[in-house]
Length: 138
Image 1 (cartoon, rainbow, N blue to C red):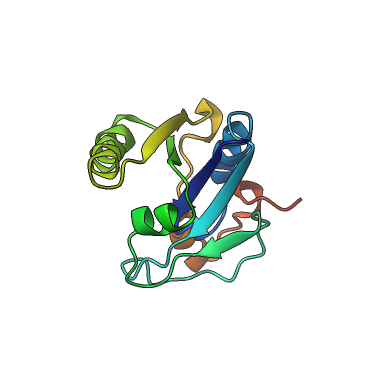
Image 2 (cartoon, helix red, strand yellow):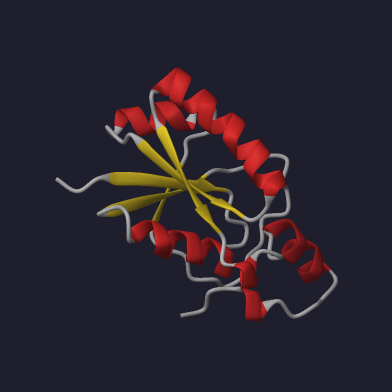
């Protein structure tokens, strides 16, 4: 049986960095469920045309670990751009292992994409800066 992983985030917008992590994850897992979490701290939901894989939406108020366990999934994948990401993601990984017995696989970002983040893209978009080159369009 192929192993299944969850790749979760707000993905607002889905960009080439996200796509890279997804594609690298597919080399390790037979199937990846992309889970879009609605983050109330990231109010500016963008309506940009960016092609992301089919996804599930995490029900509001539900822990991702509980969502994964309901679907018998034991792995998360997370992209790491830098040491700040690692510090944050490592703490989450330890908690997810401790509470839900879910392992986290870290995928280092391609260095050519490490400067991309959704918050910056949203800000640039608000300032009418063309960000299409950073989005996945095909």
